[in-house]
Length: 134
Image (cartoon, rainbow, N blue to C red; front, top):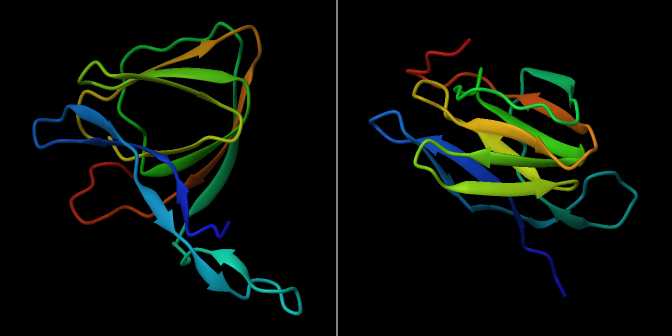
């Protein structure tokens, strides 16, 4: 079966500063990534400004907070529960892609569930006009 999109969890905020989840997809088309390897499903390139690795220890839970900047987290291991400002809660684990763009409002709450540390790779994105985050 051809792969034409990759889903991700998106956390944004409305004009009132309340965060909300959505489930968009990144479109993929056949393209050359590493010639002479055969073509494969690939997305357009998006600019990034940094890469960091983060561990949330088992049992860790934070207070409501906005994302420190526009970023995409790739969950490598462990399980998270995230509650958006509108009260919707999502749980996800290894293999999940989580795009955070709730940078100015009341934010979200993140909690590590189960007894395993959560390991994330986070790609930081450039600010957009009007962003208050660095």
